Image 1 (cartoon, chains in turn yellow, purple):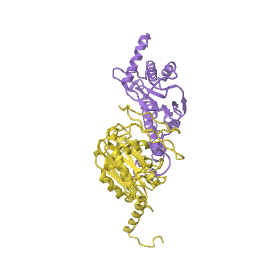
Image 2 (cartoon, helix red, strand yellow):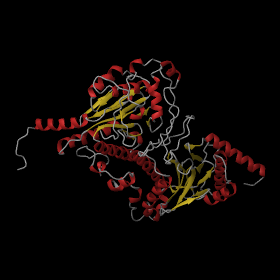
Image 3 (cartoon, rainbow over the protein chains, first blue to last red):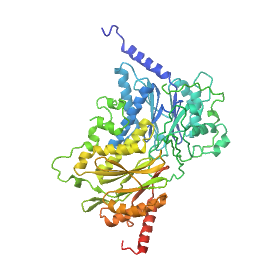
Image 4 (cartoon, each protein chain N blue to C red):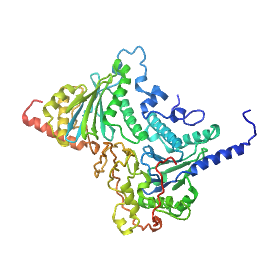
Length: 322
Length: 279
């Protein structure tokens, strides 16, 4: 006999949800938050090859927590969906809403029909012409979609971290402020003791509103370290541009193969003349970034977003699967 | 045909979730083969398919110190008629390469669009760029898929140029309609006016030129092509239409502004006038 016991639908759904939730809770959190120039994504991830944050399309990015193989599969499907749609219609017809719907249906169907639900939680975000047009969708393992405003935290201790971000988040933060808040929140996860997370342990990317065409950009570690350090000395920070004017290529590190970052496709020529020469890694792959349009910081002292001063306890193991 | 989401459930079709190729063209061939330009069947009874789409003309490419340049005139013809005075035939393929097309314009433009997407798709899925030779080979594969159309007269002959990040130099690749890929050195040209443009390039190209000199050479080569080939358009000062000239170097793809091309074109005309040529 296949079904020896009767299991009520409520119990069945609850068991599946508990299973998925447990899997997701084991993962490290991802913080997604809006800042004045776009949307920033941050997570603790020592791996440079296995990303939890990725580009989907011109204005759309993807972030996920949970099982790597499952969300990687969804990411690839998302890229195919977006490219297919953009090829069939026009680049402007690819929207985060459409993608979020397709993901929701997929997650929902798998939750009900497959033997095991997907242990993933996803954010699909699209940067708009101004901050009112920004869209952040959060999708959970059962296909639930939530249209979020301002920020999202997902993964292990999402609620606790979410409270921390909620306290500090306000509209029109500078990128530096937003990232310091995100990193402080990520470091506050383990119980009451907060820790400082080094730039080398972080995966950070942004969707930049002012970039033509492909707006997704990964922040290289040196740039990130600079942004995070800014908050320590507010007067100095005010003198520096809030965003980096150049970024250097991360060099190949040990046996880990350094991967070149996605390079933005060229857009129509613009007035941005301050392009930095691209660095070339020894492998010949290039890791490059275009300088964003430098925007001075607001000048407000971001003392409350200062990361914890305790000595860092990274304790991170390589691998981004969780 | 499922376009992007399954019609009945709205979920992503299984093909989207299947692990496998990083190639968008391969994905299309599997999931929606009717969308590939080469898979279309020409209906019987079309006597001269080549007249269906305007004909794109001359493209030139040349290397310079630290990069490569690709330029194309702005004319498309339909038989003896000028179909377009302002068509653009030189495009960025990605950050470090450019592609120009001669031949059947409709299919050529679609091919370019698909090629751009192919490179971007790979980059997004893999998180790294294809090598320049890899890109050139992808274009050859796509052309090969277009062979049935080419045999009916709708041939596309692209010219591909890019900056090889591993070698630190600009490189040029030419193709034939069957997908044959040939690496060219120093300079090359394709399209109806290429005969004249190549003759001009041969005399004007010098080793160790900088980008500025290369722009001058390219515009002059196109000027010579337009001079003798009716299907190639010269600089149009009345309407302000100038050849599309783009350089690809370590800094990426850059299109030269019309104002600069206009200045160069005027210089060339002045030089010719001074020399007292009848040209």
